[in-house]
Amino acid sequence: KQEVTQIPAALSVPEGENLVLNCSFTDSAIYNLQWFRQDPGKGLTSLLLIQSSQREQTSGRLNASLDKSSGRSTLYIAASQPGDSATYLCAVKNQAGTALIFGKGTTLSVSS
Amino acid sequence: EAGVAQSPRYKIIEKRQSVAFWCNPISGHATLYWYQQILGQGPKLLIQFQNNGVVDDSQLPKDRFSAERLKGVDSTLKIQPAKLEDSAVYLCASSRNGQTTDTQYFGPGTRLTVL
Figure 1: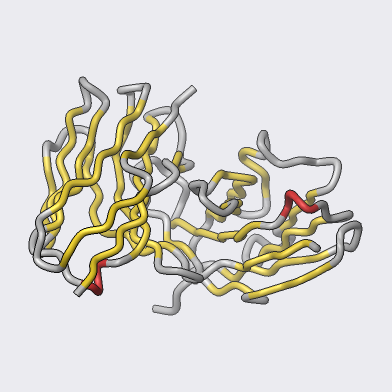
Figure 2: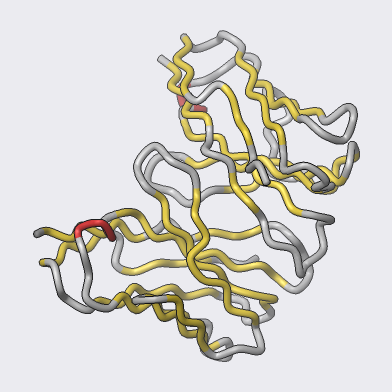
């Protein structure tokens, strides 16, 4: 059974810092991995999607990497801003299914 | 293109009462998902529909939860009777045809509080 773990559960940093969020999964037979952002009281916004054959994806100040063999992904946020404060969720889609399996998320707080 | 719509956005009920949530997926999307997100947890799939048929409901507590998508478009998720542990955000998502290659698009969610 696929399990997704995110570390740390919470993170507080001052504005301008570069930071890394970690995601690990137990079954390497994934189709893709996706990073979402969730603001309080809101739905999920997709940030980056990495196919299993890819190593990384970039969007603006965000860079996500994937090491499928070791069951790990990282989300790198450069030059953090207060507007980046949110919960970041990692989700995998197994090769055998279509539903997403989520981690518990990392709640990020960026202070000005 | 309009996104996934859900209503109501918030609902507060007493335990043992019943409640229903509504979801309207993106036009033309054949696959619809309901996820439950308990505070501090990631979303967990409750049920997946392909058109008006159920693909996966293995994690749906069928003694109290039910869902339908009668015409293959809108969907309703019902809880009867509600328990305290049902307090959560209920997210609806849709995708074009349910293939592994599809992207899921999420609605804003319905936050349920059971007192």
